[in-house]
Image (cartoon, rainbow, N blue to C red; front, side):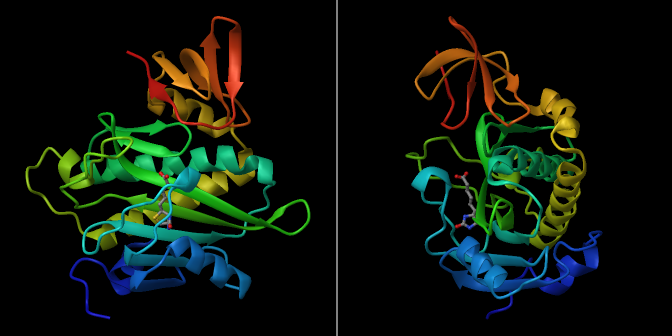
Amino acid sequence: MEPLIDLSVEAVKARLHTTRYGRSIELVSRTGSTNDDARARAQSGAPDGHVIVADSQDTGRGSRGRTWLSPPGQDLYVSIVARVPVLPSQLPPLTLAVGLAVAETVDASLGAPRARVKWPNDVWIDDRKVAGVLLEGSSAGQNLESVIIGIGLNVNRDEFPDWLDTPGTSLRLGSQTPGVRFERSLVLARLLDDVERWVDRFVAHGVEPMVGALEQRLALRGERVHCDGLHGVVEGVSRSGALRLRTERGLQEVFSGRIERLP
Ligand code: BTN
């Protein structure tokens, strides 16, 4: 592949502080979906923490059947093979743990506490989506054999189509320094550090450590929203990763769906 200016395996590895994530890493210039590639690697025995990062994807996948636009030269499309002892029912809270990790990477990159986690799988800066998380598990018996952690993080893109469900942004657009470009290798190394730490925390302690972190970071908390046929005020997230909505009929938990702010 053509050398990429700001993304290389050597530069990522030189900055890593992880024990497993990214120690085995592949960089490809173009692929269909890194989540599919990571699934194939997991099936042929790739170790915990194996990473595939692509410069572009032809069929990048978002949650709920949506497309993840993945043009070359600007952003990060990353999938991690995670061999974690979790049940399928734990994927929603694990998705939130990864969202918290991505939010920390965004803050560290911008040098300011700007990122919010928008339930269930988005990271926002100022009401605009800067990243999305897509976890896909494959099971062997009760526990999942492996989980593919897919992350799309908008790094240097400065134009987004106006038909997106949620307006898009990037680290570059969210930065206080006009016109800055971020080195993707550095952002990726940070991201792998943060994701490994949050996944390990989740495996060791469950949702407990997430509660305080989400207090600070949950987007739309206290606002009136619509989600999965319900109207209510966002109160927080339950131990199972469900959204807690205060509705006219009392507190309700929503397990999947997309939150939209009500006027
Ligand atoms: C979402 O917000 O809907 C989730 C988006 C996840 C996109 C990433 S990009 C890397 C990985 N490969 C994919 O095909 N999807 C995920």
